[in-house]
Length: 336
Image (cartoon, rainbow, N blue to C red; front, side, top):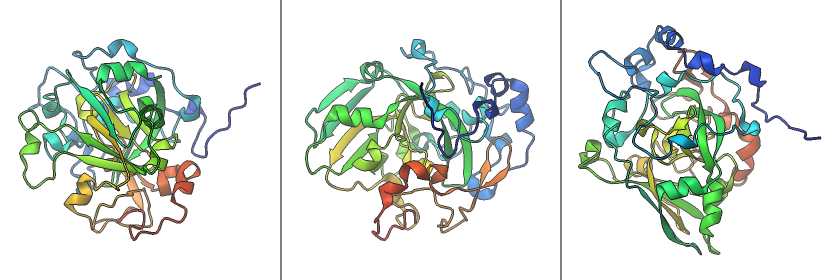
C-alpha cells in the first residue's frame, strides 16, 4: 500500500480553490474590488490588471499561440506538491501583476513582454561539467519529464501569490550536465537583446540578468524549472520558455527566460546584488525576522484578496530546506 506523507504546509486538496473558480471571470472582477496594495509593492491589484487603455490581442491568462509546446499541457500534478496551504491566485491576476525589468519597471508589464521572441531559443549548459551542450529549448523541454507543482510565491516587495507551475526539477538538469569535482555553484543567465527588450537600454542596470544557487540548493527537490503555469505553456511575462522557481526564496531569485546554465567554483554575483548589495544578498531566503532596509518583511499581502498574512521563514518550506543553511555564516544573514 502506498503511503503519502503530507508536507508541513499541506492542506487537504479539497481546500484548494477549484479550477472552475479561479478560471471564472466574475471571481477575478470580485478580487479587483479589494483595496490598494502598499506603496512599497508598486501599486494596487486593480491597477495591475488590464486597463481600458491597454487593448491587446493577447490577454492575461491566454496560452501563447506561437510555440510548439501547447500540446504538452496540462501535465500530471505531483501529489507531494498538490497544494500550498492557501488558495490558488486567480490566473488573470497572476498573469497581469509581474516584474520583468527587461521590458520595464512597472507591474503592468504583460503587454510589453509580448515582444519577447520565443523561437529560436537555445540553452547552453557549460562550465565545470562533463557534458557541456547547447540545446534548442524545444528539445530540452521535451527531453524532461514534466509535472505540475503548486507553490507559494513571495516577492521581496512583500506581496505574495500561489500558483501551479509546470516543469521539471532543476536537479534533473544539473544531473544531465554532470558537475565536475570542485564545482560549487550554478550560475544562470537570461537573454540580452536591447533591440527586443527596451528595458535593457537602461544603462544603470547590470545586464544581462544573472542569478545563482549553490549546487546543494540546485539539487534540492523544491528547486524547479518552470515551463508552464495554470496548465498552459509559460506566458512571456512569466519568463518563457524557461524560468527558475525557488519557493523558499524571494522572487527576484527566480530568474526568467534563461539562456545559460554555468556550473562553477566561484559564487556568482547576481543582478540585484550587483545593483545594491546592501539590500539584496546572494541567499535571499524568505525571513520575517530580517527586514528589508526600507520595509518590514514580517507580513505579506496576497495580491488577489489584499489580505495581510504573517510571513513564514523559508516561506513555509523549512522542513525541506533548513538543513541547507546549517553553519552558513558569511555575513549575509540569509538576506540583507
